[in-house]
Amino acid sequence: MFVRDAKALCPHLVILPYDFEAYEEVADQFYDILHKHCRKVQAVSCDEAFLDVTYLEGVDIDMLASIVIQEIFETTGCTASAGIARNMLMARLATRTAKPNGQCNIPPKGYAF
Image (tube, rainbow, N blue to C red; front, side, top):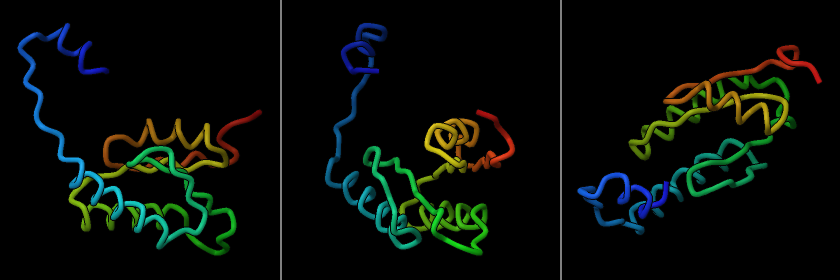
């Protein structure tokens, strides 16, 4: 929601100052963690990304997601959610199910096209 819309709905809304530098620092830490665990990272925003882990053989993807989520929390103090699926659309849907602070894996046999 845009601030102007929020102010229209709630005229007494108090808006706190935005600390861009702190947010940028956490976003950098977030992406450093992702790149540490995966070489194919597609940024969506400063706090959202898709990881292509199809090249990783013999890796438990659920465990990898748990490790990344835990490392993000330990490093930044922020919780994270992970959606795991064969394509970006299904991963996004899995992430919706995983929020807040969880993970959801939609196995390949879990849907049909």
